[in-house]
Image (cartoon, rainbow, N blue to C red):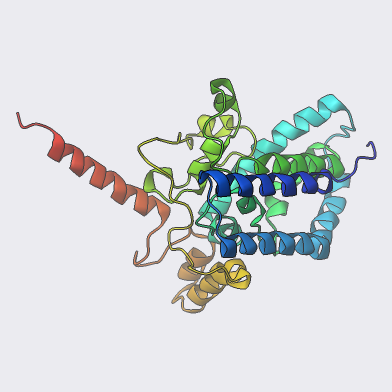
Length: 306
């Protein structure tokens, strides 16, 4: 494989320049929102994520080194092969992201990225600190390596995928050209993903190509009559990076410790976020169902009597 430098390191100066530009734009036009505590928290989460990758990255490297000899094919390197790898990596990313919203063990890690009630370029940097410990890479990162794509190629595809997603964390760009909106993930599509409006919950999981959401029934366009409300269903109300990083882990541990059976413990661990045996808390499906009932009731009220 060609000796290619880490694209994320190359992109960092561009990230900084774009954040500064967006901050200036926000100050001069009011068409983007920044809050100092929230911004600092996002930057600290991003810094912690970099430190985490340096400290814990060996776990994934060791795993991929272990399974590489068992690959079905020796695909090797080529730009056409890399293009295929990039598309397949984004396909896998869609499902990894979807499970991160529907399995609490992985949501405890991913919720960090959704914890900001603002939506700007620093939100893209709000990343978890202990992702390798969730072992999600084993379940979703192994497929391409076992097919025969070199681990370094898979890592490169994943890095470019993350770089692409940086620019879609903004309110500055309203819509891109229609053809682009139809194929690619855009700020409009990703704003929906970060929104807590019931209509928007658990939608638009795409990394680069929005076509996966359209194929698998999770696509939701941004609606002018439904402005996005950002954050999580129960917002933290704190910019403490340690609380942001570990609050859901602690909540899950407490729930499992209080479980009355193995089934309950497994539900708190592997069930959807918000799951409880008695339904005292709401999952996103329950929130969406309640919203749909209200919409249907409102529709019946507004219909003229025959």
